[in-house]
Length: 79
Image (cartoon, rainbow, N blue to C red; front, side, top):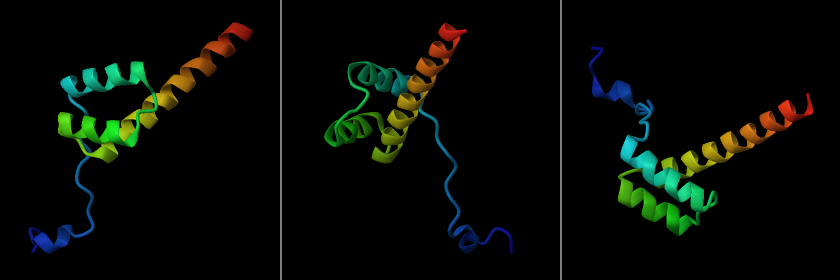
């Protein structure tokens, strides 16, 4: 039977993207500090209805995006 719930063991849940409200709050904090403390990430997660891990990953991704933007602009300045 394909609908057997035991078949779902070990299957990851579908990835959830941050909604508009969450993004506004995350971006606001990121502008103040790209490296929020564990306590700050915990509070953000609670306030926004996200997991602490998803908040942590979001900040990691934003820092990487910021680094890439800087390196791309440096490359264009050199040419």
